[in-house]
Length: 560
Image (cartoon, rainbow, N blue to C red; front, side, top):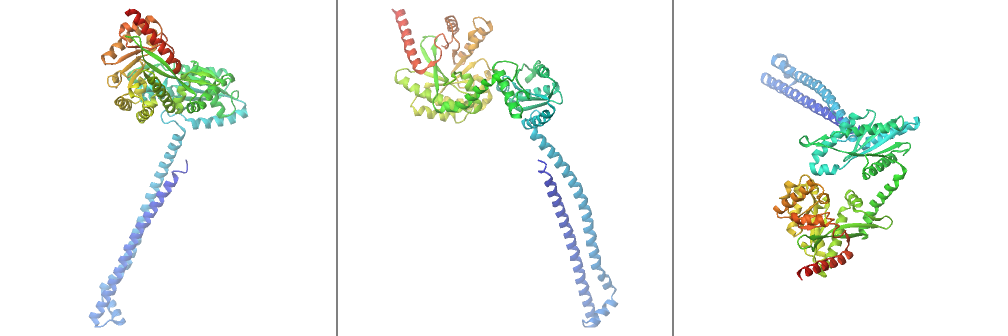
């Protein structure tokens, strides 16, 4: 970096020098013009006087004219005057330009040095928080390792990740998320020692490097300091206090690694396991490597599983409150791994979102769903099924055309599908989300809001969004008989949706008492284990016919 800006000062100095040279050349040129004019004037005047006074032009008449005419004496001095004037002016220009060059060059050197320092700082520090970035952290760890190996010292690396930071960004906006990151970095800097390196690695991930540990108890001391950082709420939008927690992974040198990459990898593994096990922190140990290996296997094999059709789609029925008949189903994806068995979707779907595989995964689910629907329609099962959309898919401007192509490929009516979106996915980019939702609505695709009530910002958009259905989150339904506030939320949601002309689906219906209660509140559709768990397509078809036959038999018995 240090060689980028100084040549600029040199170039500008050369430019100044060239300009000075040009000015001096112009001054000298005009002096030469003056001398030439003076010489011509002398010659003409002398010849003219010689001819007029003596009737001829000869050396004798020219000599006599010079002796007798005082005016010619003055003319004889003009070339010397012009020559002196040219030298004087060029010398003055050179002196003034030299002073200007010296001053401007010094200023350019100062600017170049300041710019170089800024470039060096920006290349090693995070622009949002001002903390060291990953590059500077790696450099400091590498230098500390070389010293620690000679002096037999212990060091510790803490990897810190904020819990549910994505939800904060989605609900409060990225500006408030950035404000939170700044406050976290400031608190950490004030809580820890100046000798410790606090770095932001990207997103909501921080690293804390302690170059010298007296003993293992120092790790506990640092963890206590970090814990106090998050003990007090952070104040964000409109003085709103926000409680934030973190997950921390710890790796110790040389016990857990003797090089930079190993330390970072193992601290990251410990942090990931701590987050998934809902622990505040975890110190790395060899017995958690198996979990890490499983995670890496899932990440590496997911793409192959999509390409090889190793995934399965399951269906959970949706039951009409009025008729108690099956009125639809929700599609859920499952992955039955050869060695690890059935992998829950909450393990591989977040990985698909982080690794960019959510697009291919969604396309696979939609394609498999359309093929299954085509088969069912041919057998008289005229069902509308709903498919969940990730935020990346919802905000993809090309998604409506992709979906049109999938439906056309199997000659399936567009009203056979319903797409489920979450409140937070819309809030990530409301303007773009609304545009795409309207395009889908105009295509004839129905939209449902999933997990309604768990977000914070969508009520203002609910009346604007082209949706036909809301799904009450199961966390409210499961406790509505025991928690009065949950019952109030369920009733308010049903009333609000009906006033907006929307249908209401209640998830998490597990007992007949809850089903009856929801029916009394005016809920339109029920979904839950009371009726069926999610099951594969062929099994769902068998279940569907058996269930419909039972409902028909009950109605016939009542009528009879």
